[in-house]
Length: 194
Image (tube, rainbow, N blue to C red):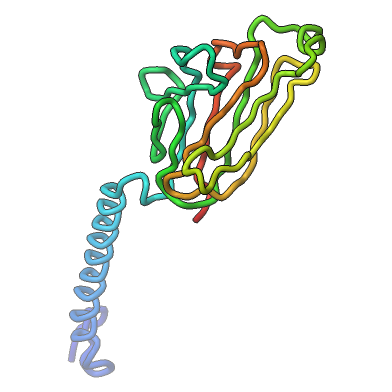
């Protein structure tokens, strides 16, 4: 007769020892497989380029080296410049080019240098800011057109569909120049969805 309290009571359950001996390694094996699979998925996601993860995003600051007579604003971005960066989109001669189709949030803020509310209202043609797709020519369209009216700063954002190869241009028309302060004048996009 088996002892009381032993792990295998042969009389009551002859299969319990065999069952315990099979289930414990099976559960341990499943746990190990699960851990290995999670680690592989984690490594695979870390190796994907940012573009495939939906991280197309840019935050740019004004580049003051562009032609003075050109109404186009030229932008620059990169970690050496502080808070500006490009991940996905690229700069083409100071203009932002989209590299992936999708819906994007486009935002811009421009502050005029040497400006007071009375200086903007005195001009016959008020200073305006326009953001649009300037190339390819077949997709050329204005996305935002903003007037400074009686203020010195304008800011706006909008959701808009953009296609791979679209180049966004920003034009400032009028006699006043944009501020050189990176906290006052900036431009950017963020991919939201396909």
